[in-house]
Image 1 (tube, helix red, strand yellow):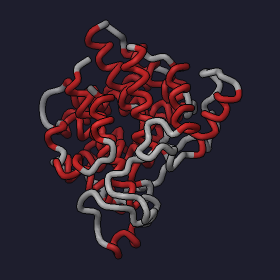
Image 2 (cartoon, helix red, strand yellow):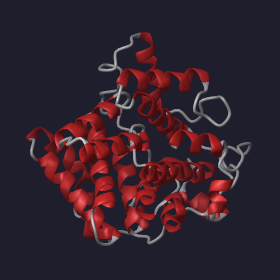
Image 3 (cartoon, one colour):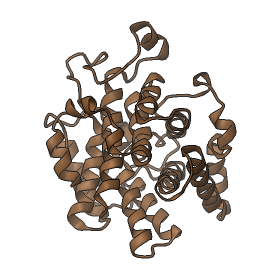
Image 4 (cartoon, helix red, strand yellow):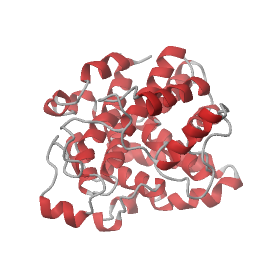
Length: 317
């Protein structure tokens, strides 16, 4: 395991989550009236929550990371057992209690607990396309990335892993494709040369080329068409970007925040400024920004206030 890329990606997710949590569910007008987020702060919506608190995005990411570290592979049953430990027993949380749980994620874990079958627990309906698998997919992306480099895993095998991990909670093809596109972008950020935009464009192009091989993907892939034209997409303004928990909106908002900024800090503050599902969007963007800019680009003051930061360091290293 290349600990550096894991540290970069996982910490990017957690920082984004904690940075966006205080203003999640606010609309942009309300956020503008109160003033922008400029760093880690205590809750504005949930006023009793201290600065540096992370939510379900990070908890599920850490549960997946812990499973991979322990099993040294993708073990879907072990992952779901850890998700159960999070939901029912407060593991992988700052305070010993699961917080900010998405409906599809909760229903999927409940289904698994009632009937432990990793192939039927995830939500498959049209309305099961929130960002709940995308926000936690980074460890599976890094696992697949390393397997492609060290063990000759094919693109088909890598994306099968990503889809299987998504499908534990979000089994609709739309959600799987979001996670797959995220993987291709992450891989390009790690592997390609050139600037940020060139790498993201390469990742998006690789992802679209992969999914276009199978005609059954085309309808759902078309929903991500704005990202597919990366240059035009980068010219959009914040008014053109939605920041809901819908997986298409969330991936768009995260990628837009990344490619319209030039530092980790700028990327994260831009993602949070979109309001709405700010913690998840900033977590998704933060994972990619962490891979590109690196852990050392994260403001030390942000890391210092993260709750249980030593526990997080231990899980990553």
